[in-house]
Amino acid sequence: MTYEFVRPPFTLIAGVDEVGRGPLIGAVVTAAVILDPAKPISGLNDSKKLSEKKRLLLVEEIKAKALSWSLGRAEVEEIDSLNILHATMLAMERAVAGLHIRPEWVLIDGNRVPEGLKGRAGAVVKGDSLVPEISAASILAKVARDAEMTALHQQYPQYNFAGHKGYPTAEHLAAIKQFGILAQHRRSFRPVRELL
Figure 1 (tube, one colour):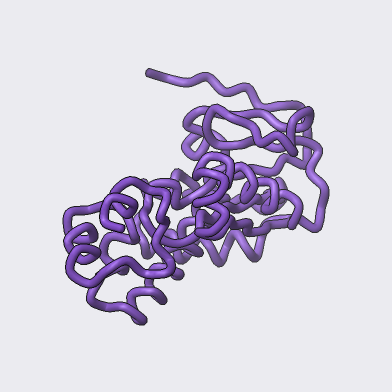
Figure 2 (figure 1 turned 90 degrees about the vertical axis):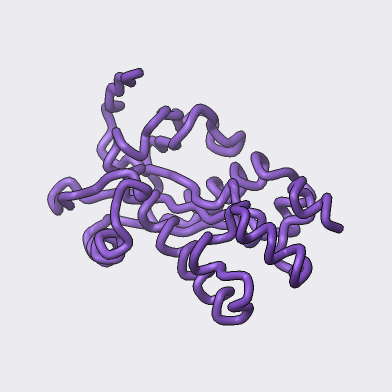
């Protein structure tokens, strides 16, 4: 299926994306980015389609060249009390609120616009591949969350968070069964809840 995307007639467009809806542990991390048309960045794409090395190079270029960028997050306690969808929407609103330039329009990856952005935002399915601002946001969010998983790995190497990034892989589920549930695990997620 191919998606058509017509760019809105605005100059200051913020792209927003999230990383970490599926994992069993840690915060959901979002990013908002307003790119500078005078400083194009080549190689932007959905973060999942880029190598880690390429993402790390691009993240520095995005931070240096963007007109504004910001990270947002929702913590495990918020995910467990609100549910992952609402926590993600909240984290997206926080990322946009953190921009030091107010965007004229916000483009969100996916098919849903957070309540707090209604009236000045649109959703773009496959936006992380179609919209450079969303691609840049996906890269910032992924690099930030991966760094958090690497830090958690150093604290609890037996879970191998650097390898599976907290997703519900067979290895991660086996580690939870063997070593227990950590404070950072999302208790509202079924694989964790069933082991409580």
